[in-house]
Image (tube, rainbow, N blue to C red):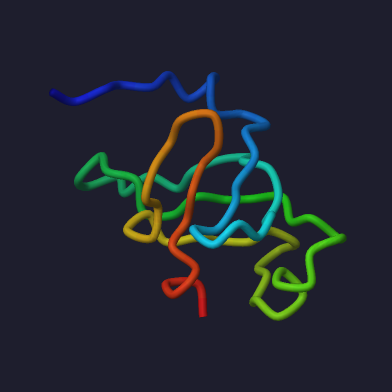
Length: 84
C-alpha cells in the first residue's frame, strides 16, 4: 500500500542520514515535468553539521537525489553513502 504525503506536511521536516547525522530542514523538491516524479529533495543545510560542510551545495541548498531517501516519517532519512 502506497502512503501519500501532502507536500505541506514535509516543509521544515528535519533531514538526517541513515547513520544519524543531521543535514538540515526540508525546503522543496524538484519534480520531473515529464514523469511527475521527484528528482531531488532540497534541504536548507545546518551550519552545525561537519558532514554538510563536506558536501556540495548548489545555490545554498543541499540537493539530495530522491533515490537516496530511505524513509519519510517523523524525519526524512537519507542514505549517507548516496550523498558522497
